[in-house]
Length: 263
Image (cartoon, rainbow, N blue to C red; front, top):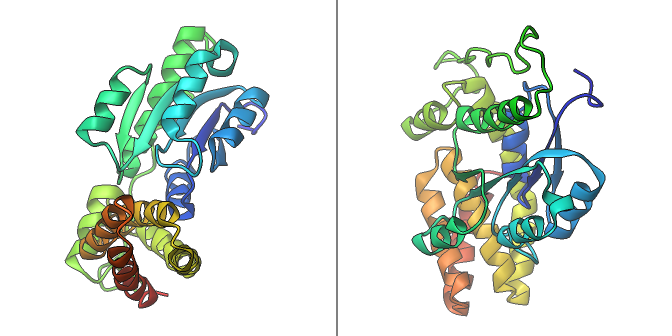
């Protein structure tokens, strides 16, 4: 299916590694995936394109994902026929209470399994197609079933080497070790940029920026089968949320070391 005919899905996410995960997870679907990192950019795309599904993070630079959902609800032209799925690692009870009053189609928790993300998109677009009666009953299914996993021999080159990584492959990648290995390689390259971003934020004592970075890294590291590193990132996120300067500097130093050993 050409991009001109493919339904558009918009991902609003400011972390490059998570964006890459979503791109890889949805690569086999006949969609056009649009990506942006801020609410104003998302609004501009919604004004320009016929977007069928918005998948948005909550913790974004500037306006939050909740702000985007509210703006879409307040402007019928902006949010017409567009389903919204919140995609967040910060689904605390307080946040869930906030989300209950919004007209959300689905709530997705980070980290997420590839299959769950695929199913979200398939369900949203299949439901939309049925509601619009766009496809005749005799037409072939627009979303073929996903291909089977492509596991790697545990002794092969590039194979995961820890039990936590193998669990991550089962939990988040549907058993596809090749997909995990490809994603891990992309993340390792991204960590160099993340270290630079964290250094800049720590030197400027820009705790909100450091919090966003730690928030994203907590999800990425857990997806990669590195739960202890993820907990280090989560502790830094909490320290940055409290504007606790000494704890932020110490926490960033610890997380930086863990990332640095992977670069």
